[in-house]
Image 1 (tube, rainbow, N blue to C red):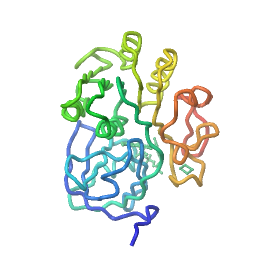
Image 2: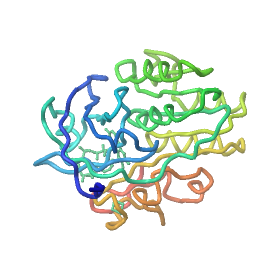
Image 3: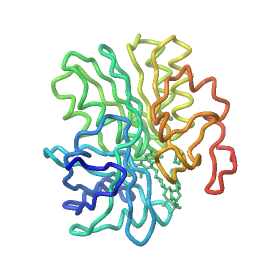
Image 4: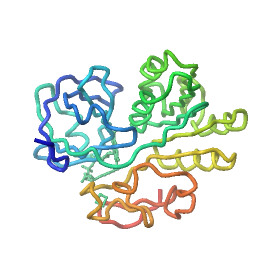
Length: 270
Ligand SMILES: Cc1cc2nc3c(=O)[nH]c(=O)nc-3n(C[C@H](O)[C@H](O)[C@H](O)COP(=O)(O)OP(=O)(O)OC[C@H]3O[C@@H](n4cnc5c(N)ncnc54)[C@H](O)[C@@H]3O)c2cc1C
Ligand code: FES
């Protein structure tokens, strides 16, 4: 019988990996989630707590997928604390995905926004020349640098880490490195996911050079399927029109980079 992707599938956590003091990856077996497209997400039910939107992380083992979660409020902390052998509900996948271009590619990720970037790396062609920028506040918060390098083993590539406080890699915001690189190199595509102000600046910089750029947005989500409207950014619903949008489209949206909605649906400044 075909699986109804709107019904949560109960999955058992098989492995927990500590990435940083506040970020963990939870691995589980699921054929559907193991093969989602980069940019797609799942709604994850944490029994007794809540349901959260989460990008689907890759696993290096076939037939497996993962969630990489940063503990924050009650729901993400509940997910972060799930132990091996415990169960979660997973529905989806939802949303669109990045348009795959070939050639010189720039990927810009911050925090758990690196999750769709890692999946994107698994879809690239061997001839692609790839630069990955990883932004973090400090050395403690850097993760996926080794993974990005190993996924790109067969490609010409660079993985550059930027920390705000300079405790690891290049000092400064990752967008300063974006500015330097787009001034020096003509990229065939720029992809970004992470804090919205980082994506906003990246989209602006790439667009100013006439580069193809796409961003995967995050918004408050409740239904995940285009019904409730809680994820709107202007006229767009992030869950069903996105999560991936073209830079040219985003720069016409007055909310992108400036406002998000709180749990009551009220607009708040970033
Ligand atoms: C498409 C998408 C992919 C995401 N991928 C990841 C990921 O890979 N790893 C990760 O750690 N986080 C991810 N997030 C953000 C994650 O869903 C929020 O961190 C989380 O919802 C906030 O958790 P909390 O514990 O603060 O929520 P609580 O304060 O417990 O509130 C829970 C409720 O508020 C909603 N909510 C609160 N904040 C957000 C938010 N920022 N985005 C969406 N809904 C919110 C939830 O849907 C839920 O109903 C993603 C968000 C989206 C939209
Ligand atoms: S989360 Fe309900 S419409 Fe997008």
